[in-house]
View 1 (cartoon, rainbow, N blue to C red):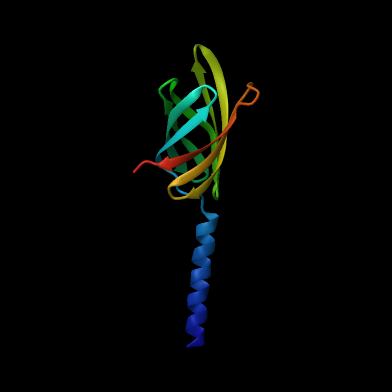
View 2: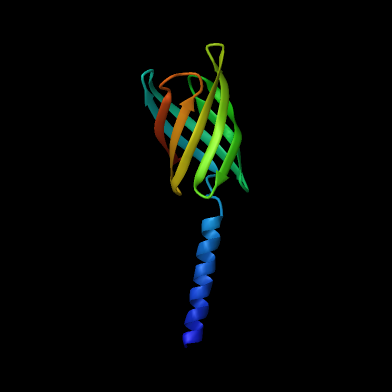
Length: 127
């Protein structure tokens, strides 16, 4: 009987470790609201995960659609860059975050070249 318990405990431990070493599956559609000095903006993210590579798109009414570039996901950590244009001017935004659950990602986003343009937001999965 003790041998069976040991085998079950070993299987449970191996499964738990394997799950922890695998990147979080965030593939799909997500929504976030960012509030800043220029107002409230809704972001729609579409994430595609292939191993540790993250691709997809970001959409918001004011800018349109941008491609996710240099995207990485490792365990519960995520990072990517958005390049786009607003009012004819190019912009670059760095995103980094933590997958908090199957339905929530906490992000920090930093607009390059703008002092004080670092914002916190939470994205939720669109079902």
